[in-house]
Image 1: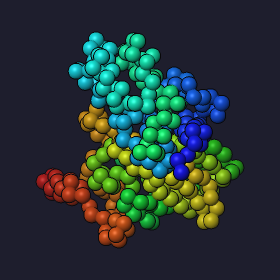
Image 2 (image 1 turned 135 degrees about the vertical axis):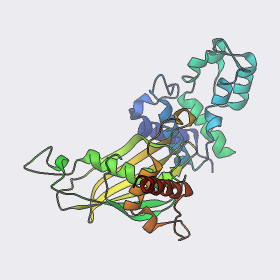
Image 3 (image 1 turned 180 degrees about the horizontal axis):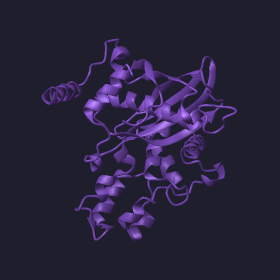
Image 4 (image 1 turned 120 degrees about the vertical axis):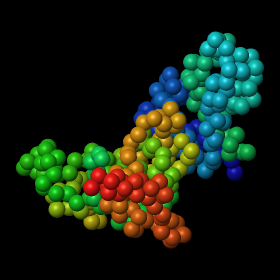
Length: 129
Length: 182
């Protein structure tokens, strides 16, 4: 049986508390991984390891963090993701809410896009796949 | 070569686990550095020994060609100190290996007493660091031989691990250089 939303959130929270050394109450659904929880690039690797173990899933890095889009000149102009790039991101990251990012899609802000709920949604898609 | 914080491997199973031994000795300056009245082996060096034991275990799977660095010390707990005369056993078990790095779970025991445990995360440096050289091949193979990796190292199927060809070539070149200068 697939785990409930609460169970998924609980396990994701445990992984984040462990990987980032943050307090339980800091891990809210809306918290952003980088801005609110202070995740650095190396932490994402750790988080991926922990989620894979906890949920017994495989997480290809380019699924969670499609860096290839952000470094592709076809999708980035003047430091901003183009409309075609946004479409690609939406296709690759259906679990993420890109609405805020879309209003000013600066590449440098992309890292701060992912929230805890995005992560939960992503994990859920992997479990139920 | 940098300092090594364990003396040799006792067990080495490629892509799985390794056990190394560290003999704590009063002659080591850092053993008495913190307290002459109560000499002990610093916990930070236990972590370093774990990292070296685990780092080489990981790098062996790449024929020692990757640049493997300790990226993060996860959950770590310390329960006691090793003292002069103690033999510390460090066990490193690979938990997760990916394209970009790995997590290794480590423990340090003195006989049946658990002194420390830690989850270590390693990252593999990418092509941006291709010009950075950590070790010279001839120097590294010499250290690896002294650590007995190739004497006791096995693959999971029980077959012995091979010495990578680039190491053998580096040794040959070193021998040739010495002969040329003698």
